[in-house]
Length: 221
Image (tube, rainbow, N blue to C red; front, side, top):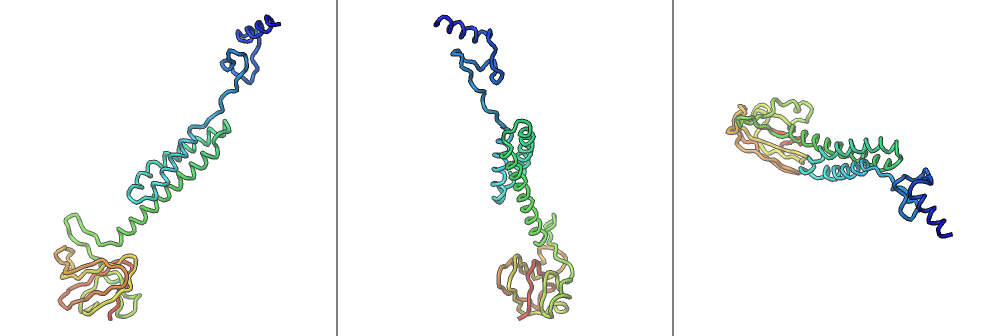
């Protein structure tokens, strides 16, 4: 009986007996007991999820979030490829979809930051390459405001705006400048300031122009 068992085991190991189709040829150990094949993996789905997650987290951090412009697209692409692989092998589909969503979220956050920075830059006073100051032209906002109230624009003292004390309740961004000339030179600024919340400024009769920038309005006291 022992000899028969030994002969059967040897025949199994040498290939005389067929290996069951669910096991590969290299998966039959010396003892003759088949070992199940390793579970399939989807490395692209895992990698895409991890990279996209890091990109989404960094996107929330100012300045450092610029890294997300690289991480989020890479995570998105890897996740999309992971979805394709999952459709063939049925592994990692949920992880790949989550990575794709995080990649899109990271890119959207980056775009919001760019829009916010661009909006702040467009409303701030600009300086030319030669160091000259570029004041806003005209007083187009005055027509829609009550008399004695001024919004963003440049106003001639004496004709468009009168000397005196002006008050603002504040807004997201408020800037004022007292100018001796509208030539755009930095030397033409008599005084200026960025303010937030309730504040006042004084227009002097010696000023030639007054420049207001931002979303706040100024009313004479």
